[in-house]
Image (cartoon, rainbow, N blue to C red; front, side):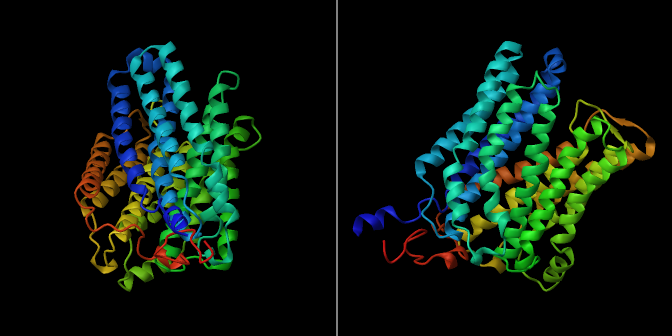
Length: 440
């Protein structure tokens, strides 16, 4: 019995800290690499722009963004489903492969040598994709453990993890076969960012508002339907590009299919109910709520860009992606993790402080993005670069987040607790941790 008590307690509660540190470090590397490409890439960048753009976007999405998502999952899913935590060795393997993969991609880009770039990027992509495949076992543990008591988030909570290994295999195959089929990299990029992360980010929004705060923005009996409709709309948006290129779909229909998923999910998460709860002075994470307000702008930007109302040079990312990544992803990932961190510190919900500087900076950057888009439309000008003011405000927001997490992880853990407040309600034996029962 004594041996079991040492083995069963949920070690992985709070493991998000390790993955957040990895994400923060890799964000610095990513921004440095992106800056280097824009200022010192020269002819090497121009001649290999398609592959460099793709590798940078995978470094971001499957790299530091996935690190944060995995950190949250390692920490709370075994608590919510009350199963034995994920293996510590597995988490180390995941983090190791993920970090080394990102470093390899950056090194390949900075080398400015095509042979070195191809070799190191192949290594980096393989490691990033393999890190996703390594999560198959714990993902299936959660999937098999789903129960009726978790209906406040439903399939948003357990279905995405089961898709991760498939995502890893598809991404790697697309990279390997990129010279055989020219459209594969674009398809892979859309699958990762526009499909998977669009689902994952909404899952965190619903988890925070529906489960953590118990606002019931979506009724339990409707959560499965919302997931199904949203996933189908995202898939239709995903395949609309190839169908349009083949001439099977008109531009207007493609534009509508790009717009619909984000308008639907914005309405589905019930913004009216969210505003009512805020009006009643309920506690919440402001960054997560702000991210909800940007969801329709992702769809609107994608629609306007598809319809050709404004044009973006091929050297920069589509504008709707900037809104999706910084307006939604940045705020959801860091906002959710910050709230979870405060749960671990057992800070009363009414006493939690808001990082106003980070919120103002990131949303000001998004406003600059939208303004530049509409200005281009009105003036009929092609956007050849992202507005510098937007870049500066995004950078300021990131620096604020960086300082916060350095302070929290190195100097302010003296009030930190292993099992966070709220989540212990799911445990049969909170003092023993996840996966412990009287029979153990």
